[in-house]
Length: 345
Ligand code: SAH
Image 1 (tube, helix red, strand yellow):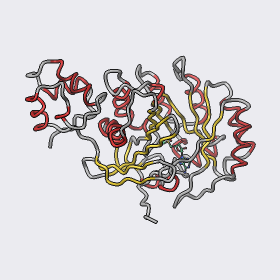
Image 2 (image 1 turned 180 degrees about the horizontal axis):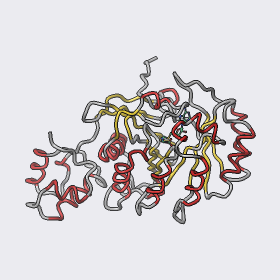
Image 3 (image 1 turned 60 degrees about the vertical axis):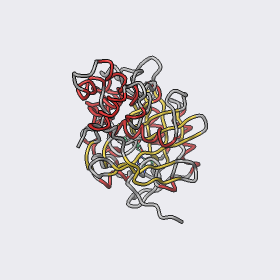
Image 4 (image 1 turned 90 degrees about the vertical axis):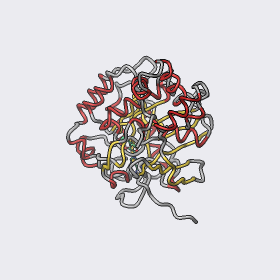
């Protein structure tokens, strides 16, 4: 079967087109695929008809297929996308006021095993390719007629998977999304989130072209973090804070910390004070997420008053926001991506 072109960078495309084509053809295909969001070769009007039919005969664009679409009462859409090998993965579109955010996956399932997250219950099925990562964005923008140049579009790699455990493909996808000749999004509009894989954070920091970084903190002490996020037995809180301190931020950039609030577990005033202290000398902001519940998750959501108090304590030291849950009714919110079926009412 022919290889999909989505996910190829300029050098890959040159090779795929072969030496019989002049060099600039690869660039035309590259620009049409990403900036132009072409989903079929016949649409690429800059190419001669002969090349268009040759491409159609031997290649395919290679976007994922929509296996199921769930529509939330709040406007959120969860896409279950079918990949080439028949596996499915989820992508979420959250339209809101002045902006549209697409939450994409980096792996099918996730190996990290956080105790509050439904994706963990899937385990890891496999890494996504760079093409499957970029393909999620192109599919959702195409289906919803979204443009990347209107200043509305944001991408977060916060779906299924731990992006930094698939760093090579994530970086390749990010280069295509951020390349001014490619999908041409600003690096301010793309965020990758990690459970705190310290050596990979250092690698990402060395990339000249990279998204912004968010870190899932989720606990205020080493002990509680290791219980909630077993992977952190390898990557200690103290070392994580040192890596954050050393992270090479660009002049316009702040780190983001995410903190899921679990009633009676990590949501006390003491926790809030410890979070404030941990982050006090970092250039950062905090997003609090009250637990989104789901089958198999043995925790409860704190009351809104507790969340507000926690926020005001953390705010004494760093900017702190409460993330509004989106798509709760269709299992599209943070920590709910597990290919959950939603029964029609
Ligand atoms: N593996 C990466 C990317 C996933 S991001 C990471 O850990 O950062 C998913 C975000 O959702 C994380 O910040 C996580 O803390 C949060 N989350 C996970 N399960 C949740 C749940 N049940 N309710 C609310 N937030 C949750």
